[in-house]
Image 1 (cartoon, one colour):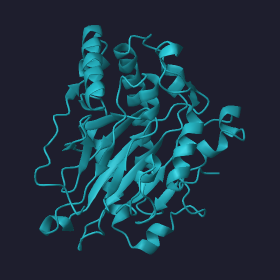
Image 2 (cartoon, helix red, strand yellow):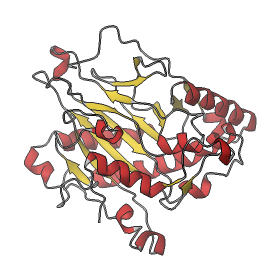
Image 3 (cartoon, helix red, strand yellow):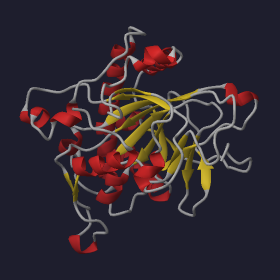
Image 4 (tube, rainbow, N blue to C red):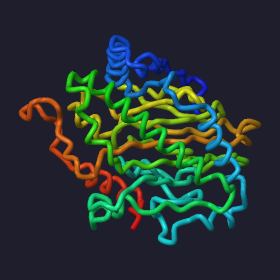
Length: 335
């Protein structure tokens, strides 16, 4: 597929204003939770505004990312982890096909990316033991732009705080104690990817996409995108692909596999992809998306909230599940 169909409809993914809920309005919290529940039952995607993340913080990281990805390949490769495929630092175009995580066959994705792991750790066994070390290995930062590391660290911390809030709304939506998820995501093994889809001066190979169809692996994914050709699409429950509008400051949120398991498939961890721009003038424009993937603490046993006799999935440890998915796509956990 060289680009989206001209008939691809634009989605009606709901935009939920959570400002009043963040300010402590209980009625607004329940309202927002209900809207999240409805969206996650339907398509597994929603967008949030009023989230409290400063526009300047988003803009700083986007500016640094555009600067970094515009640099010569040799300079970018200097920020590559010495072990190929490790989930830290720079990854060049052609090294990954995300569809393989869902056992799909696809050519390598037309993207390059920068992978950031947790930015705050402690000298405690959870982080330093043999099991924990791979999830909390040090990050690799580029020499230029000089502000990259600080901008990425500040953004990562803001996303961590936003996830904690959204998981409280999720708890309300699922009729469990509001703090149910607090101790399950407070030492998250989540990661952040700065995905850069370069301009396409020539059509890609048959079947090659900017990002092939896949589901995400963990809890909530939070995306800062931009309005540029060749964007995000999600698959409806009926199997139809629809476009998802993205923008830098209105975050698109979708759920991952483990959150779907927690809800016993009440919520949908949905296939999504990034298509190519229609070949022509617009194909010369790159696209940058910043995806923050929250993943529950590695030692959390994911068991559905429904009675065990109704469970559709066997319990699984969070870390083991992520490792399984990484293995399918060729990602090497950091050491």
